[in-house]
Length: 389
Figure (cartoon, rainbow, N blue to C red):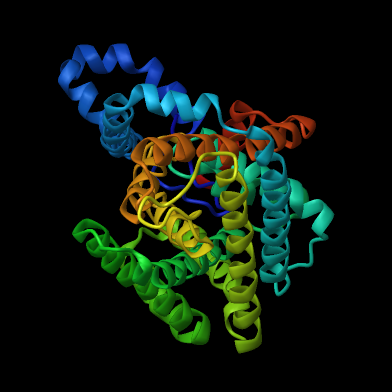
């Protein structure tokens, strides 16, 4: 299922289909098939849904690698899964939700220049967003929580999306920090991991520099995009696009103060240390030692694992980060000397323990609001029709 970026009044969308568009496409399928043939229809379908299929392809690649590991030692993987002490997941879930609350506080802090939203009203919105990331493709949950925030608090979607993107950049920087802390302790650094770390470092620090430049020079930025809008877009689209850009720029006001930047960074470290602590609790449910030392895996190795798997989950993937979470995590633990069967069983169980609680809670909050995926798409489609009309 595709997802639209429903900015707000003045939205131009993301180029991905809404339900109303899908309905038109489906009704026109027969006519397209007659006039253009199956190949023409297929090209149009792939052009609309390429993001989804790219994610499925990447997930399939990583999942195949995971299944190879499982199949090579299926009996031992099952042995460790069946004898794991899953009660250790309970304190892990508790500390994980502390991290979710810290995420909520960080978003609350970043939204302050736009509008103050109480934490108790913002927490369900964050849970709905993470649920959306887990069950819908292409990180649609980020747009979903921006949509719910607009629906309940009146904050424009483009402004809240700017804060969400800034969050993701800070998350990436913290993940890289965790990787840099843990890498020196690995017996050897696989060439593929080294290459990916370099790529992610360039991407996240480059994005951070761009966002800093935009936030520090709002008038120059505004003049820059207005110049392009006036010269490249038809007149009827200029004002809506200008409105989206203005509200997006407003969402980056939280990056203009050094004190705010420090607070956002420190909170991001707390968020990810809380999640790493969940890794540590779940680890105690498995027969978990490093082969070379015979001692439990140190916390800094779990920080490295957390950093690596979450950097890889920024890649397009199937819903729930299938494959992109599991394969890198297994590789990190195996490189440190953990038995591959243990590393595989632990990573699969950890992935499920991370996915299920926040997904159930987010679904609960979404149902309490009377929201459904179809309703969200219908409302977004109606809003776009009003704008384009």
